[in-house]
Image (cartoon, rainbow, N blue to C red; front, side):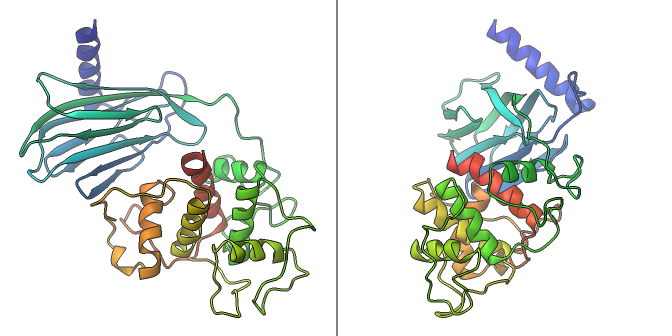
Length: 334
């Protein structure tokens, strides 16, 4: 029975390699398919795309129900491990994952996790591998409730993330009817979201407001959030006496704050040895943010642009912040 299943899966992969696979149940959706092996990081973006990785052939099919990844070839002599993570889009979860080594006896060790992560190790130099991965996804029963924001259309790439953070109480609108998705996300807004994520509630009158920062008015809405973040070591201020109230947060600084929150909450912040950032602007990352941003990429919180840029010094906008916070809850906090 298993041979029939394997044969069928292989035929499907070969057929899909010739023509795009249409969804029988709805419109196609994209997957963020990430491959790591022996210090190399490769992201196959949202599409039916072939990616060639030093002799390893990676294939992705994107539908709203099933996906395949297929390799047939030799691995580089330095290859010691391959980690493959399947990340479905918002409102989808991995409900089944399986792997097959085809046409060969294999000495490899394979560890799997329910969320669709495969770790393959035990390679010999120039090992040949013929591997087929299969995964099924399903749309979650609960869809994001609609938002009250007229500037967050249902077709926007950030719609689901904004709906999630709004309905979870992590972010608020710029007004009752607007979210202002393209506006800068500033430093006090970041710590407010982290507070709400940590405590599961907004600040109230019983929360302390005292800080050493002259630019933090203890009577303003943001004071208890900054006081908490300073007390917990999540923020240290731009100087000993200034927090930088109103200043936009950069992407790398956002990663640092998220990394510190993850540590505070006892999440796993380890990154496999040899994992490196494969972005053309990786050298531009500030030394203080290197570890945090590497973790944020590894954990799936941050992704690069289609041009292979991470843009560490760019200001994070509110739509990006909503996406990062959503991924944090789904990938780190749970």
